[in-house]
Amino acid sequence: MASPSDRFSRADGSRGQPLPRAAVLLAGIAIGSLCGADTRSLLPVSATVMPYARLTAIAAPATLAVSAEDVARGYVDVVEPTTFAVAHNTPGYVLEVYALLPLAAEIDVYGLPQQVRLTGSGGSIEHRAAAASHENLALTYRVVLGPQARPGTYPWPLQLAVRPL
Image 1 (tube, helix red, strand yellow):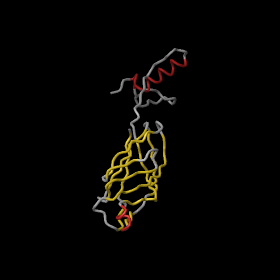
Image 2 (cartoon, one colour):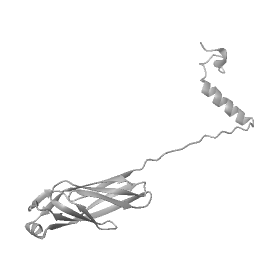
Image 3 (tube, one colour):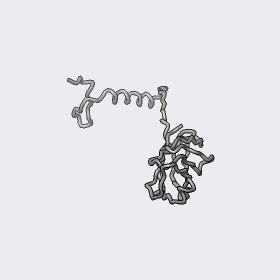
């Protein structure tokens, strides 16, 4: 049961509900501040921002066309770029390239500050950048064909992902 000190009177003389103790404490602090009492408190606050890197696809080829001439030459130059945006809050990110079909012996990647050659199964490319930024990239490729490659039209064989450094 609430004690009489936990209840308050309304202007009309009726009794109200018990005041929560936190409300009484806050009212006391406010009255102390109005009366000129010097009240100070320090509350340490910290926050941890988790590192992230996010890739947003803008455009990519739907297929890879391999001609008999490409097979004879040993590679296909993909001139239609894969365009995407990368947002990150770290001093760079790792671009992961996954080859989904066993067509390539190697994959050359163009459009980054340096040319990169990956194995036929793909690989990781470390890209240093501003500590937090948003970048738009357009990559093109040379797919060095493996011995199993045959002429034809294939679903786009590369998949991209990013992770923070």
